[in-house]
Image (cartoon, rainbow, N blue to C red; front, top):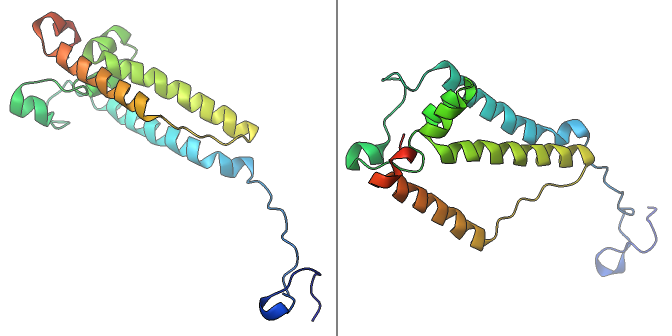
Length: 157
């Protein structure tokens, strides 16, 4: 049995496995699967919300927090905001849920960066430190509090 020098197995015997071959990087098509899959999923959801108007009752469930407490959660008005955004009514989208519109913009930026990095062959690592999670939680809590107070009624859907 011929083996590569320096590849010894147990008890000093040489292993029949040669040196490790370099692994070829995945093709562009394979790298694009995840970001394009995410875009297709979000696009399908937006297309559905654009086609099925959430302003007409009976199409979507009511927010449980609103139903049981009468309070608006940070997501209340999100479907109406998405529908207005898709149909080009940007003022109505902001009026239904301003934070959701900010989220649409952030999603577009992250997806653009992800696609550019994938095309260039650079791995996408999206790590958010615990401090940023606290900031995001504080913004959501403040938005929820303000939209439920009389002076913040402009933020209510």
